[in-house]
Image 1 (cartoon, rainbow, N blue to C red):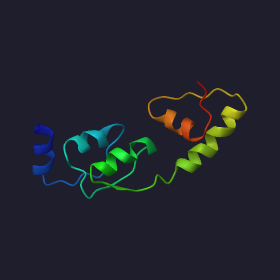
Image 2 (cartoon, rainbow, N blue to C red):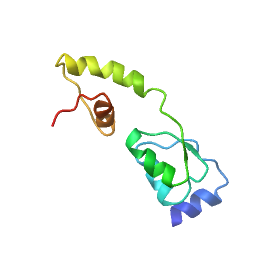
Image 3 (cartoon, rainbow, N blue to C red):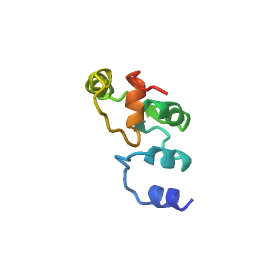
Length: 94
């Protein structure tokens, strides 16, 4: 993969990636031994790719902020991975 060659041969350390960036690194076999955190549903994928999972420190805070809005039927805008926070808070309804 060109991406893998570019990242491995750059001599730079990867310190952050966003959204689905971890999945790109996993596909390129670049997570072996790296510390990673992401939304909980990606945990098994990152571990399978050889990463060391670090618990997301702010998830409990996000849940504590969102849950009262949902319980009081206030509007909540949610995009991208924020659905995972709502799911973790147990407030998503199908």
